[in-house]
Image (cartoon, rainbow, N blue to C red; front, side):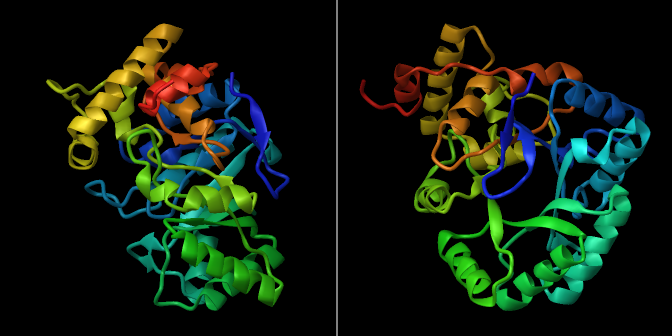
Amino acid sequence: MSSRITLPGTALEVSSLCFGANVFGWSIHEQRAANALLDHLFAQGVNFFDSADMYVQWHPGNRGGESELMLGQWLRDSRIARDEVVIATKVGKMTSRPGLSPENIRLAADESLARLGIDTIDLYYAHFDDQTVPLEDTLGAFSELIDQGKVSYIAASNYSPERLQEAHAISRRLAIPGYIAVQNHYNLVYRDEYEAGMADYVESHQLAGLPYFSLASGFLTGKYSRQSQPESPRVQRVTDTYFSARNFDTLDRLHAVAHRHGVEPASVALEWLRQQPGVSAPIASASHIDQVTPLLQRVQLTPEDLAALDNAPV
């Protein structure tokens, strides 16, 4: 059962795991299967779901919007009260709605709301840092959506600390809402980029850190070894991004800590993330109900465990 936290600077009470909805329209195509998985997640206390307008345009035959459509259909089918779930989605990377110009943000937001079948997006992300558009224009458009009640809070994904700081300075100067959360690539074997400055910025400014690829696209789940890899649509990304001697050594230590606690490696990898500065809730996904339990299993990691995972002397 997932516990609840309140995202810093917001009234959003969310589960300690954010479920990544990019599986809908990618590895899950039938609404019945999506509903069964989402019903199970909600019954286990998960109320925080992360999507994007461009999910999952990369799958053959898709155009984007599939994830939002399936998530929205579940909301209608389940008849769960709107205030019992927190819905996050993103704008900027959809091929037919590219970039962060004010006009594009307005159009994309209305289209996402329609696909989701809701009146308000709880957390709306700039999916990337579009440096072709002045931050004043992007933030101004987000502010208008908040004023109109179409968005509750805004956030940034794939920003650098320097650009996030610039965005916050502009928000203060214009007296408009600023980004309250950061969603960047961060996990046990992909650390340098986030820890180089973003972690400190997120913590010192009391933002919500919501890392994606928390399980390294499956690398940290126990499916991969030096000798074998699973059948998965994510295999190419995993091998390209995470296969290295150093990362396999980390994976060995992860397995050892998981074995000591009698849990799956994924449970330890997610708990490690929750212990990192600035992290509020990791984002992870599953395609089958039997994959959910390790995502929700909490682990009491000791200082020795954390040192082992960091390969630090104790």
